[in-house]
Length: 149
Length: 129
Image (cartoon, rainbow over all chains, first blue to last red; front, side, top):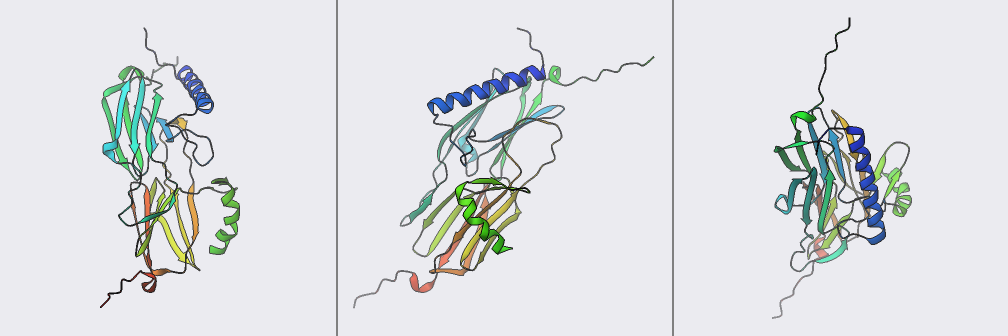
């Protein structure tokens, strides 16, 4: 199969798949998707930014330990799995409120272009997981000089 | 300033996220537990610079807030599910808490506020002679 970088097409199918998945989640419910603040969004929320030579994915997972997050890239898909542990209740203490989500979460993000799996880095800060994925050479935009006669 | 926020309180309880003309406000989810000598509040407030966090006690109310970091994107968003917003939530404090005994810290996107109880409300074990 030929792999080509066609941004518009990739984005359309990405949205289509997300919409489909959202619909399925709405129909059947999903253990790793919850409604956030009644907005009916997927959980955890992500941003995917395309820069010139890399993709940057950020995911909001406050209160998660680094050791409880697992990343993998497979078939053009970035898979993030993890677990948010329940707040530990010290001995002798009692809950007054318990609103925070705890349990397993997972999100699969279809990458719109080829990434170099050797050049993926991730860091976790202030509750945000940030994953930088370098584009493969062929996925980088090429500048073509056109001579104006 | 503070009274403005209070007027908004009623409105905010109906929906966790509301959009006014200027800024989107998110009501952070909280875990709260009570100890023998304190109440500990944990609030989910990811993506805030420590210096942009605000914890304030006034008129028997605890206010927690913070604005999310805004990064200038050097590219194009293919997915954008988060938003530029501020966190804000207000709690009524019970009389048995000491407004002088409050401490706060921020780690992994979680704000932690410890509110100490007043001396006299701490349970005391009386020795029987």
